[in-house]
Image (cartoon, rainbow, N blue to C red; front, side, top):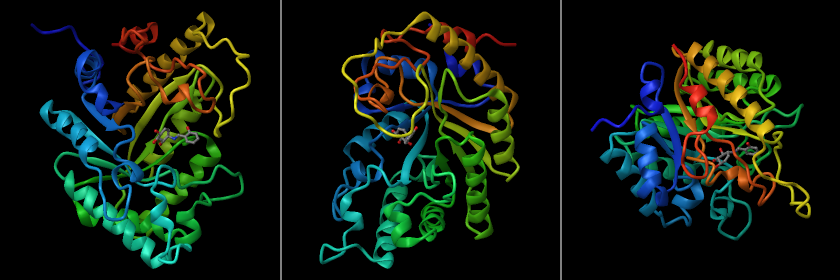
Length: 338
Ligand SMILES: Oc1ccccc1CN[C@@H]1C=C[C@@H](O)[C@H](O)[C@H]1O
C-alpha cells in the first residue's frame, strides 16, 4: 500500500533530496528511512581517495560497490565524493621512490590514474562527482589551501582534476565542493576559482555548497547572495552536505574539555533549529531553478560526523530525524509549504 509521502515526495517539483550513507545503513530501519525520504545518495566515506585507493596498486571496491548497487537497485541518484581532496587521502600519493616528496609529474599521473579508474567503474551509476573538495584557504589573505596538492602542483592540480574527470566520462556533472561557501570572503574566492577553471576551457558544471550550517548561521541574505553569485557563472548549485549544528561552527578540531558541557538537546536549541531549517528550505524553494539537489550529511541524529567534530564525543542533533529515526519538529516545518 502506498506509504504516506516522504521528504522527496514533497520536493519532487523542486530538487532531489539526498543523504550521505555508509554500507551498514543500507539495511533494516535505516534503509527504510532512506527509501521513504530520499531519492539521492552520497557515500560519506567509502569513495574518498584513501578508503577506495589505500595503496598505489590496490583499490578497495567492496564498500563503494555496496552503495552503488543499492542506488541502482532502488533507482536512486548517486553523487560521488571526492576525487581529489587533501584529507583522507592515502599517504602513498605524496611519497617519491626514495621516500622523499613525489614530483609534480608523478603526482599528476597518480591523480589521473585514480580519477580515470574510479570514474570509469561507476559510469552510468554516478551522475555527478565532487571532483575537487575544499581547495580554498580559510585564511583571510590566502587564495588556495596550502595542502600537499598545492605545494607540489600549484593550482594545476585543480584544472587537471576536472580535465581528467571529463575525459573519463564526458556525461558526468563535475562539481567543485567546499564548506563556508556562503561566507562572503570564501564565497568570492570560490567564485574566482570556478571562473579560473572556466577560463582554462575545462568543464565544470556545478558548485557544491556543503551547507554545514548551525542554528546561528548563515543569515538568509548571505545564503541568497551566495546562491546567486555562483549561479551568475552559469553553473548549477547544490547543497551537498546539509546539517544544522546546535553549536556555533568551528573549523578545526579541538580536544574535549572535561565533561563540562551538558550535550543534551535543549528546547531553546530545537526552537532555533526549527526556525533555521524553515528559513533554509524557504530559500532553497525560491531557487528551485538554480538548485539541482539538496543532500543531508548523515541520516539522523543517531549518528552525525558532528558528534566527533570539532569536539570528539560532544553529541549533536543536526538533522531532521531523531535518534529513533522519527521526524523532528523541524521536519514538519520543512514539509509545510504551498
Ligand atoms: O565543516 C568543515 C570544517 C572544517 C573542515 C572540514 C569541514 C567539512 N568537511 C566535510 C565534512 C565531513 C566529511 O565527511 C566530508 O567529506 C567533508 O567534505
